[in-house]
Image 1: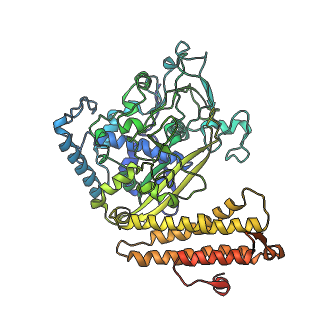
Image 2: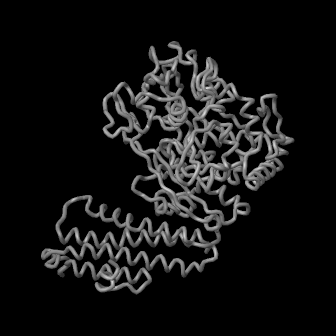
Image 3: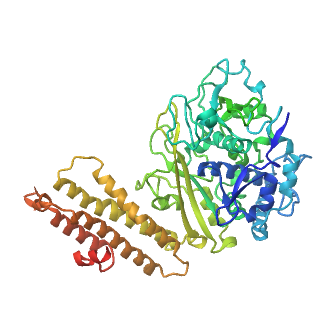
Length: 576
């Protein structure tokens, strides 16, 4: 029996106004009114990222076949299910790419989605039932996980508290600060709309703690494609614009993907999907990538009033090496190891603000930070932003980062925390790629900021550690992270204040003055708490080093590297 169709039933949580009000909408209502919604409002940012990619898969599928007026491209052959049945001929590739760009430009100008999106969804209506005897959404039927096909008598079982990443509780470890109480199995209760969102999220961020596989032979299992990404996406002031900014219809760098047929999971049966995963770890189209499964999931007769449980079987992993079909990640070039001389996705670091990785986003810095022999690779979504610069002008863009932190255990890879950050910047700033344009100058400013913190300020703290004979290995790193914390808001405010027409030298000098104030102020906080031992100091290289000489040396280096007239105790006190 078919139940809860995602096209008609409300399940996508959206922000409807700047007071923070939210509502649930189905796919039909979502695409009809996306321009009136501000943002997604799921339980957590990683969930919103996974759901957004599902929504983008629908748009990539539709607009790879139809233009903004709902007319099929003349070189695309379709069946009565609106499904592309033949690849674009080589001689039509250039014309097809031009038409795709025209479609994107027209969609941006019109400001709302055409009826062809709803028509496509209605054509595939039977594939969007959360529960169905033949095509359950993001799931398999019982036949696909028959005992003859899997390594054990039954699939691994996962409960509601496991799929709900706000809890992520196992049978061996209780989540102390759970958003749900445990009485009457409440942690395992999932309503239909919750289940739909968490199902998409689970297929994207899974782990490796379950044991059951298909067959008896070993294979590299997926832990969820998004689990390994340092996710990067763009956003604006409404969901329509956000989706358009991430709708990479034409890959201007890796053009071999542009004419491939889009193959979202709902256009195939569960058996066809599993067979495809075992035939090849390579995916060649973005809709299939965005709707990739990490597990064959079987849900039997779910009642939202009863504890939820599902059976899962591991599916093969996607190839990570040089997989430039993926546009929403930062990249690491591997100089050694099994992926030597290949790029692989690089996860974001929990304690590192996104602006400190600005060079990774804009391809001016390598992922190993400073190795001149290391390749550089810009996220595809930023290449796309550069590609559409003529259409979006000075639109204020948010560059968003999202990753799932893991427990570091290679046998489980359990999700433990989210890494979430964003930067606001005018599009024409991020698209100014000239030799002395804004991107280069901002990166130079960030490099100088990191040099001041990681070398000059760090050297001062190391001196204090020696003078005080402190053995803690965390002493220096704690001060460095505290320094970056103090700089964080100031740098973001400076970045968003940049206007394309600003004088670059003057604008950068403003930041250097602010940086100088903040760093000196942090150093002086240490000086203010000095004791007798600090002034007595230590003997180093036949001379006395104490807190006064360390601070004086620090000030000499600061004044040499940064502009501004801040100097001495009186001026520092004036800042406090």
